[in-house]
Length: 477
Image (tube, rainbow, N blue to C red; front, side):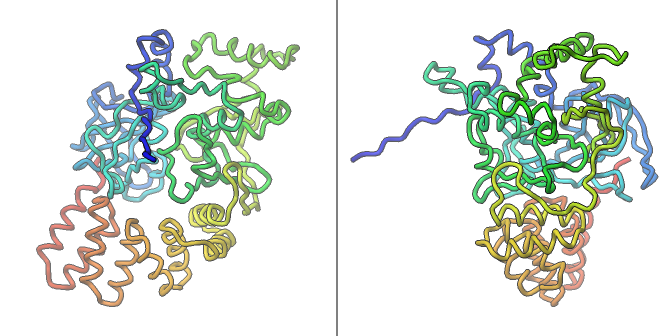
């Protein structure tokens, strides 16, 4: 019996949709999702600000220059803010500056706020681009190198929510309509980018860029929140878990979803926004109350709060509280995690505890991560996380074995090299640190270690070259 290959639909880009869906195409181009990334060609708000932690002064020009360095790409629609990326030999890094449009000012990018000496070496991985750009083009074997251009289409394309369209364009197949999917698959279309939880863990052998609209999102990743189903604070991409906390969602069940209130193809005019969403509320609350504040339902029940992970960004609280809360909820004393989506198998739960525990420093979470991960089959991601935890606890022999099983990871290469270097095995360590820098030339620990090891071997000229390379990532003002 002969086996025949089946054609698979591939991505075509928004322009292929325009001839038949012209009104939707033009309307969607004005939405925040469609404008969530792009090439910097000008129009950057010029300005100056001083970083309080480091006393560095940054000056940004309208054409996207800062300290002699060009800002090549932007991330973010500009509705809340816009961060910037720059390319060095095809490797993408996040600039430490962000334009916060709601505050009408420049300041440090999220995560850079407390750096005493902000470096330009934060790697932009494919997962970073997944929810902001379409069809990222990473170079295999590196952490953050891409083809030119790094993504085939600016912003979130039509096919992110409707699936690859090549067969549909040829009249040979249907396109995905999220509203016609069963509730789990339907909600996954929005959750792929608007669900963060306390931790998101990809399933073994899976990666988020492999997800296609209509798939079960839980087959690709598991998401975890703190026990009790509450999320800690308002996050930049945490709409789904906040929405799940709302009384509206809990009473309505599967009937209510993101599309009940949002049309992803259009954005209501600023002047019509109150009326638009009020009418959405009145589909269930036919006799709305008024306490003198006017007919603005969302003004009272969906307050805007500062996000805990987005610098100065302010976004809407989708938990729809009965009374506006001044401070986002923090689950004091809660350390245990539970699955929100995708199941709570030992591997995924252990990796979630490792991610959260290393972020918070909570020893209970770190201990639980070690217990769970020590009981599962070791794959590369488990090896890296478990090795990191065990090394911190002083179990260096076992950590070394684990790192050796995951040499595709920059973390493994750097840390295993450190173990060799501490024993004076400099040549073995140098080989690993050079491999780490080939994957990501901005890896500061690898550069520092490599320069020291080269000098220890009397190779001062080579060490000087490595140190010169590090200078490319020094603070630009």
